[in-house]
Length: 342
Image 1 (spheres, one colour):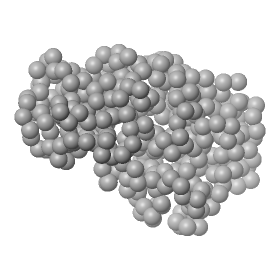
Image 2 (image 1 turned 30 degrees about the horizontal axis):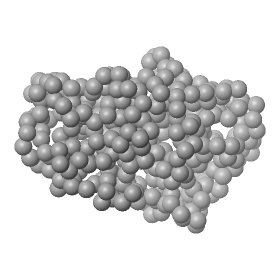
Image 3 (image 1 turned 120 degrees about the horizontal axis):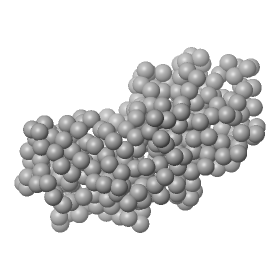
Image 4 (image 1 turned 90 degrees about the horizontal axis):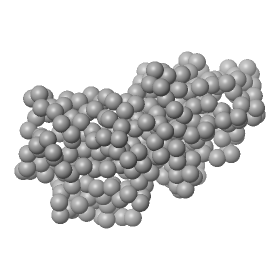
């Protein structure tokens, strides 16, 4: 699908078809209900689409794709798409964005990026962009401005929602490039400066690179099938590349496997991780796409991959506890998302 079809009729960047008349200071998510906004002038109510010319729910800014230091030379995917399936379109007649439900996988990325509380996962399955304004917050009339930095709170959806439970099937139906884009954007939205490799680039094997919030570099392999068992070995190559080509010390690099489901606790995967740490003193980490979704939906930022978190060498792990989410009474969205299924 061309950019022209997706963005047809969009307003000029920085322009809004309507506005709230005051800055948004907080967006609060309520599962199975519309998202609420709190405004600087004391008003509050459910959010509505303001018809942004530079819609954060649809595309990233160039500045969001940059990496720190030497890693900015990493040949990454230049795509500015937020939605991995490009399900968000523009209605040029009514000057609002809308979701093509048939293409939406319910990941919640667009919801987390809208600073005006216009999007929700009310049915637990697909994102919905609200265009009605029952609380009378919006003022009609074009205006210009920048997007506010807002506090986000609440929970986008329960983790037993259909969109989360269906992730294994949903991701299984995506092209590899779209899955990689999903992971990149999830990493970004939970607070990590990350870039995934350029599509079709056969000269660069690393799936993703980035930095923790403390500035520590990481390399990642993204695997959604049986190939996950081989990812620790691939991470060794990734670390070597980051060291030799970009000058980072080996003991400063965090190697991470980003998988759909944690491997069986009896699989060779965990033994290989133990062997690598014992011989090379490299601690390979593991996180699932389901865990990244859990962070996003619960408005939790990920500090990084250093320390003992995500080191699952014994095959006994519950990512819900390690992510600090146990106080939210989380359901595992699908088998293998937080702990090995077997």
